[in-house]
Length: 167
Image (cartoon, rainbow, N blue to C red):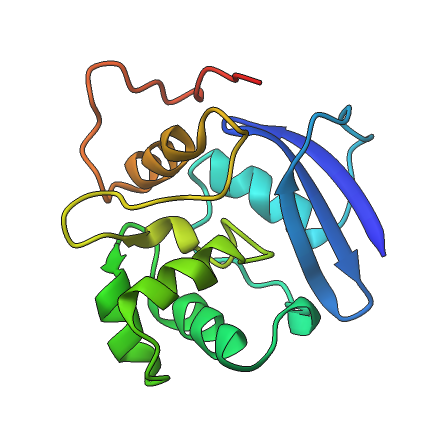
C-alpha cells in the first residue's frame, strides 16, 4: 500500500492506494508528503482547483463488501458532480432494500470519500450527516464540497479557498 498526504481546502487528506487502485481516503494531521505522481493525487488536486468533475482512477473496493459495496458502487456510478440525492432516493436507486437510515450508516463507513461522493447524499430536510473532515468540522466540509460543486448556493461566508481548519 502506498500513502500520500496532500493539503486541500478541506484539510489534509491521506490517500492510500494498492496495486488494484484507490483504497482509502481520510483526514489526517500528518505532514504533507512530497508531491506524488500517482494519478489519484493529481486528480484530487484538479478537483479542488475546479478542473475535474469525475474521477477515473481504478478503485480497490476491498474494504467494502456485500450491500455496502453495492450502495457505494451505485453512488459512484450514478450521482454526478454538482448534484445531490437523498438517502431515500439512493436507497431506492440501489435496489438493495436498505432503508434510508441504513444508507446513512453506509455513507458513514465509506472508505473513499470525495471520490465515492458520500457528501452528495443529503437528508430530505437538510444536509444530513457527514463523517469526513475533523472532529469539529464534519458538516462544514460537506457544505463546502457541495457549494464548490454548485449543488448548494454559496453563503456570504463561503470561501472558495477552503474552510477554517479546526482541530
